[in-house]
Length: 443
Image 1 (cartoon, rainbow, N blue to C red):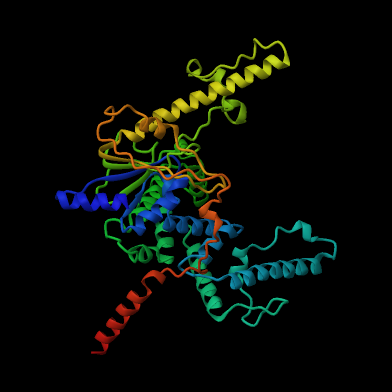
Image 2: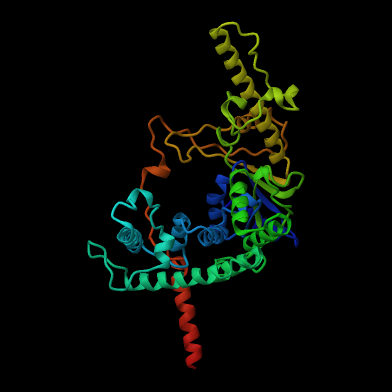
């Protein structure tokens, strides 16, 4: 709401657009923030390769690529089946899963009949995946032992998806950018993003185009630009984006840019919001940390080139087990202080990116059952002497939850319709428009 009001005020006061960014400490904050910004009618641009992979349209493309490359990736197929394009319901999903079991039983039966009853035991089979079961759908009259079969509409949609995937498999020999484009068109993602409320020609394809550029860059620079290599690269980007090059980020005044604090250092926006200022999120570190002791893949501090600036574990001075335990606890506290200092530098980067307005927020409740505590950085700013921070406006915080208060985000069950109807919010508008078109054609 604040971002929408700020954008509207800026549009009324000056001709040029005001640049706006939301800087997050963690990429896990992207999805709810992106949903809220779009609900406010604002175009959103997600920055960084890792953040790009969390956008719904790009996630659909990646899931389809996984299904084309690896028939065992039923997890990615389920995303396609339950998405806005095919909208397969839970009953048809269950029947498809039962058909996979039956198909595996038939395959084992044929192998056993040709090689002896003990030649191939069930334990030696990896089973038939959902991807394989979808590619070999049963005859229309087939039912499970409980008498359940595919619904007529579900069967039709599954057959369409089967033909779509078979066609796309014939295109996997093409270059990666061409394959990504084929998948996008086959899934009708270009139509889906253009149909979103509040979409504009400059923003509706932003994420799809950015992913296509990333695929093209990988194809141009990788020694073996294969589909498997691209998917492995994307998995690495999702796990540790800072280990890869996320690409250049530029200030875009036509959209609210959602990106991590690490991304786009050195850039500035007219308006910046930093949400999630609570302990455990920003700062993400605690007062104690294990340093390299808790990570088997980390380089020990004494072997690093910057060891002079890192905490030191007084292992050599410990002569007894008790002294060793004391030294380890001192090292853990030193590591915690070091990580908090790094988080403080990161907070400085986030807070100094705004030219005109800066919004800092936090919330008592997250996903956990217990309430969170305000970030020490936010508390320090609010405790600054009067007049030391010109322009500081503090909104009275919500009172802390009483002991034993349940999390309001999880106390009540959230009910949604499955499969999702992508046009539910605009059903009347779409039907009215269709009626107007029919009337115009009839006239």
